[in-house]
Length: 305
Image (cartoon, rainbow, N blue to C red; front, side):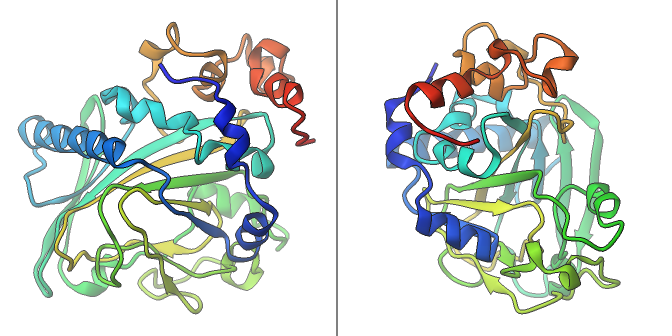
């Protein structure tokens, strides 16, 4: 399976990209995926959708968010250290990082004023499925920051909380209009204390929002603190987006991360990204075998602190 790549050095985050990311809280990486890879991933998503319809009571035509999907197809696993995206991370998070969360969202098109069921599903745990129906356009908007209670815990004292994690969103279908089920964001909200407070009505953006446009194959990198929302899909194609969350290795998993089947066959750096540590102590005081990415970066003259 995939592995360490000299191509990583060609796709590190540039100074301009870093400045934009720090200012806005997100960055669009164009043509991250090749056409053949898009087709393979989209086919895997279609297969997963059919299985959910058969086994998890998630009918075709419903919107769903599926947690813990990396083990469902090797194509999903191979994105964890993708050469066009992964190298952006060490400038943001350093070398002590891992994948701590992964989910995929499928959003079929829906006509205005038409109810659409929405499901949150955990792979291997159909009994944990949570469902609700969005009745109106307003019901689709849910402005939030990622990581749940982490935000409240870190807001004590009023200071801007630390980043802790970021996500890549890989788009498998075009979302180039404003009504293609796009993600909307409030640029700069990740470091604006006034916008970091929770709002009474999550349907209302706390500041000026923009629609994130992405073509099939693009990846959107965003800070967990940025205020963002999904939106209803009025476009022609079903929305398919894969989300990969990366954090420091000492942050707890956000989902079950069922990836054991890969551990004996992947590269040392991939093992690090899947959460391996020789002991629990190794998450905060890592040994060299826990963080081979550090040695790789040093060998190639990449300084990240």
